[in-house]
Amino acid sequence: MIKFQKLVVFLGIPLISAGLAGSVHATEQNAAKSAAPASVKNSPDTTGEYVDFGDWRDVNAFIDMMVTQHGFSRQELESTLKNTRYIASAVQLIKPAPAGQAKNWQAYRARFVEPTRISAGVAFWNSHAQALAREEKEFGVPAEIVIGILGVETLFGRQTGNFRVMDVLTTLAFAYPDTPTRVARMEYFRGELENALLFARESDIDSFTLRGSYAGAIGYPQFMPGSIRKYAVDYDGDGKIDLRNSADDAIGSVGNFLMQHGWHRGEPTVFAASVTTPVDNSTSNNWPSYIGQGLEAKFTFDELQAAGVQSAVTPPVDMKYGLVDLQNGTEPTEYWLGAPNFFAITQYNRSYFYAMSVIDLSKAVRSARDAEEHKLSAN
Image 1 (tube, rainbow, N blue to C red):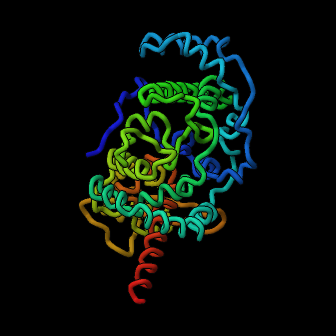
Image 2 (image 1 turned 135 degrees about the horizontal axis):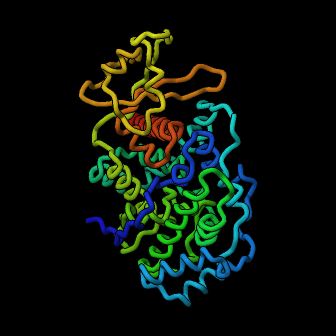
Image 3 (image 1 turned 45 degrees about the horizontal axis):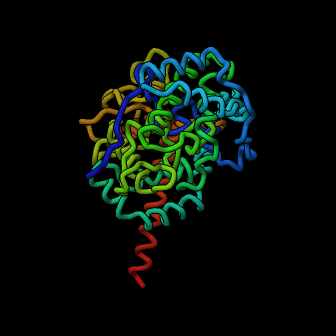
């Protein structure tokens, strides 16, 4: 029996994604930036500097809301925020990637579908086979997909981040960089700060013990606090949710997240596709109009085929698909038919590149594990 943490959805703040990149960025370039290992970021400063957030008008309005809506002690919140530090590195890291950079799917993929992650994935699967099998049975998400997400997100818990979550969330909630989406982003991070404080209170822990990424994502699966409160599960049965130290909790939580975001048990994720050369005013070659139609499978294969999309393997005709384009810089673009399960992964991180990397890493790990088991059985 799964023990769910008490769930209280933050009013008015939509939960965008479980993972760091998806909750902050929507493009492949930004997804690549946000998923970079700590070494790529040249060990950013996690300590920050003292700023008396208590003197800020918006912070005091936030405290008023927490006291009124959630019954927090004003004195305790004021004390907490006085001990919260401004993290300049988080402000720099959260900025969008420079415009004009060419998307390169193969370069992005190579960072995640590589020997270290594959071998680590096999080892993780062997160590947590029971929890992965249980998750697959209960939530319907194949073990290798959960493996793929944990491998891409944090290399199976090796790169979870060491920022104090209170520091980065407060910084981004009240001092987000000057970008076109600044107001919406600050609203989002104020919601996550609220959820972090609520989660700490519900879990009876010191909020300053929460550690995570530069955007406040926590643990093996890089769940934002709002995602923890809504989707995380106690999967090891110890009476608490701990995504930073419990691989089993992470496994169950990823499965629950995907299931609740549209994962369909037993269905495929993608089918390789090709497209015809567009011809002006030709309805049989208007496939470009199906590109960029959101993170949802909307079209039948017959519709896409009539527009000039082909697939070497005829996909199920009773399902819907989206046309996925993976741009390769100066090399030809790859095209895929994304089934509903593909788009369930994009709810974790709003990036085609991310979702395909998860799928490809999952296939590589399963293949390596199968080969390992075959070799052992042969001996």
